[in-house]
Length: 94
Image (cartoon, rainbow, N blue to C red; front, side, top):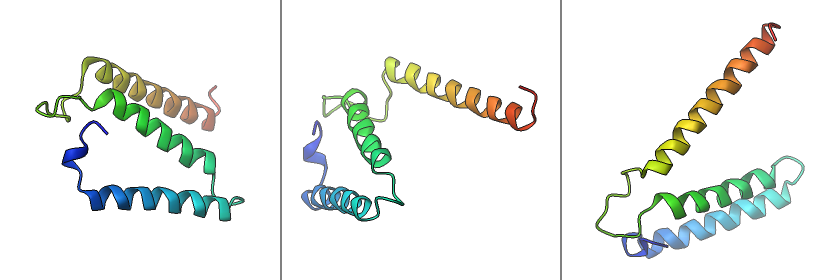
C-alpha cells in the first residue's frame, strides 16, 4: 500500500472481506463463476496500482505517467481493433 494513510482501516478491512467473499462464492459456484477471471482481475489491478499510483503522497494519483498514458492508448487501440474485427466477422466481410 503506497498510500495506506489515506485509506480508512474500515475500508481496507471491508475490501479484504469482499475479496474473500468473491473467491469463496466463486469456489462454491465453480460451474457458474469463472474464478480465473476474478483472480486475474485482482492481480491485474494490483500490478496496475504498483505502476500507476505514485509513491510520493503529495503527487496527485489521478495524473497519469507517460508509460501509463501509452498503455492506455494501446489498450483503447486494441479494443477498437477487436470491435472492428468482430463487426466485420458478423457481417461476413472477413
